[in-house]
Length: 224
Image (cartoon, rainbow, N blue to C red; front, side, top):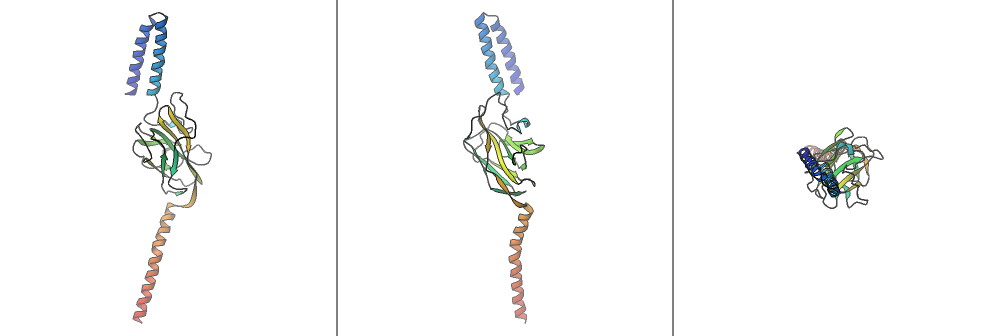
């Protein structure tokens, strides 16, 4: 559908420009001006309203026809649900600030540009983006519908990282966006999700065993 629209715009430009070029110098100038307008429209059409491409995984820079990001600090902050993480235990992430339409969100470790961990089911109006060979390595927008403070992303830590931070590119619109929006660093608290389950089981079982011992002692005294 997009390419059909592009084709029609190009045909229209060629037709009008051909007619304008038949006129004197003023017609030539009009043709040039019209061409510039068409290029601007094409740039807008050929942006990425349906999500960032995989080519942006490393530098996280939108390919918006030469448009440069706004200077930091951005009006956005990234808020993880915890300051520590454990392998396999979900961390939720919220990007707080004004409503936004475009996003690219990754988890990274140290100075490595590789996206790490895996994201769970994307919230409404977003989708997975394959980064670093991981089909769930990043989250990006699925459309230009509004995302806001109630949009919650869920990430699963990997087994190898010792420290993690979240990094995002956030766009209010095609020509208004910020890169290098970075969260505070999360540190590994050690252990895995299985350890958490085991510890919880111990907290439940231990009192139960003590109660059983007490009951057995009472019964033994009554029998004696």
